[in-house]
Image (cartoon, rainbow over all chains, first blue to last red):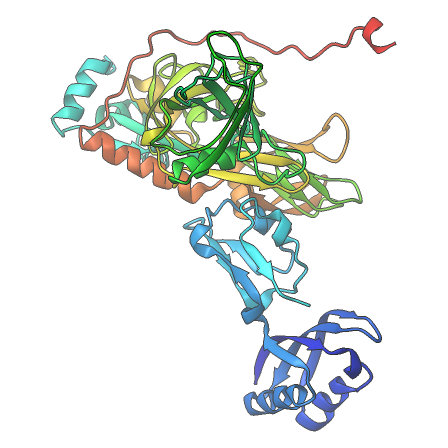
Length: 136
Length: 387
């Protein structure tokens, strides 16, 4: 069993299909919807956590992609210029999901992208503006 | 009789490579097993450091004279306004200055761009005089074309600072970072037991002329910082439990490194400059040894509500608690986060230690000690002006 987060971007004409139902029913995948922005008739974006057998998740992702839905793993959508980070800690103050934390020994920033829930609070909180998340 | 050392002897020892230099964190660890009397025998200099956003910072720049010359009366660097009330081509660019149309790029960014060797657009206007006939100039400058480029920060390295929380139901954007509603986070800003002015709380060694690490090169303490306050309440270990004294510092920006100066923009607040400062404290006697031995469990600070006008005090916590990841305020457990970089501060303390051990850096006796018993005035508003 593995657990992985994906961002899905729906084109305007795909909003009425029950993809999550098929992921559960046909691929035995447990789904946790962490964030959703769906505008009927327009585009929509979802952040999903998929839990299941590795091969089932791969097949499930292929199924989604075959319906013209962009499905990418979350870490590919998070851009962080770590080489410019000064480890000030400002981003950790707003990260209630626990993705951004300070190492208690070195006091360097730790970024566990798999814990990110795309609240996007770190983007304005970083005084060096080092974060970018492509959700939509 | 207890040991008393002199600056001269200490510098001779540093030059000969026989001095013992520790960081303030290392000496705090040592103090768990050794007394101040033993520490003064073993340790010569203790290095302290901080790397935090310090708004009261800026740079003096002399642009050099153009031909024909101009007496600059309105000056912009990459669109950022600079002070024009000095001689013809002298200016001061404050870290927080910005064009209101472009609030995320300010004086600190101009300083950083120049420091990194980038070209910056200088535009200036004047009325034209007999001796300075020119009325307008627009050109590019960089760190090599300008004459003096001097960091002059009127208020840096605050001796302790408050913890910020927010009791309201709205998010607050402050210079202490983003404060979540309903006490959901707490931010703090000093490097605790490594912080310079906490290790010399009564200014026994730090004063006018103290040689320091500033932005990656040697700089100096040139005056008490603005809002220099020495009579704040202190705890049993002699540390003020809120923001107290400060220092004004100066150094040659042409020798500095962008690694130790960093421009910053705080959402809905404005621009600031992270400044790297390291101060060596010579362990002249047992009293100073005792001061530099202080540890995070002995340093306390006040928790203030930044969401409420007047920033009421909600509690008092130690740096040990702050660095543990959570504090308790009003019975509620609150997650903590630093807003100044302890890892960079440690790097500075280590770098300064290296300079001292290499004999490349002398400890300097202050030319004059700072005043005692100072306090602050608020800004009173006269009734007539508010009618």
